[in-house]
Image (cartoon, rainbow, N blue to C red; front, side):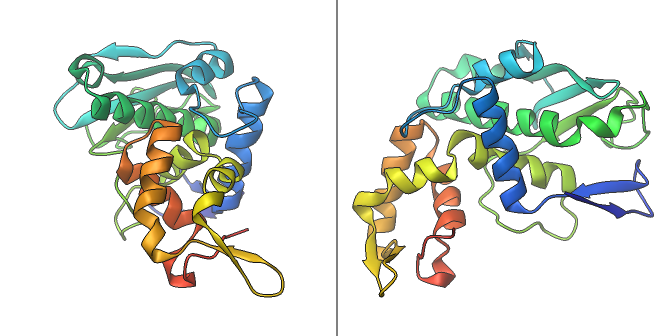
Length: 233
């Protein structure tokens, strides 16, 4: 990780993570608490939050458009709150979206807690006039973007990248997609053919219990289409 000086916003500097760094951080933390599976399967992200941060996610009625928030106290995650509407709907889509939201908030917990180490309550961080030290997450945690829009909040973009790293670690994705891939060239580099991508998305969605849009984003990260679906090592 490196830091970037900023002229605006609540902090004088912000972290910059390469995707591989986010991958490594999330996988390392899953292993530390014994929740990194030995084979492709659903990641218990709610249990990870309990074991890593010593808290249980809470569910509350939140304003429209707010999926959840993470509250900090002196560099530590004090609370993760998720919209009760996601928990109450009861559909498979909402259950999976809840898992993505929890992974998003866990990403904030790992990547951004140190920004609050001094107990500061920066005004304007959440654009809601509240100086509580928290990161308030609006909109969707499942937007299929690999690069941020010019005005996308950097902390939200980083937490979104943690969703795939938590719920679908790259080595497990690689293993889960072996049957859909082919080997090319003398080095046996593996590629995911375009006509197999839809089937691969459905497989990842089922194996890791995520919505198809999250599985598609993850496949686009691991097997970028611009590289003709070649595995990104």
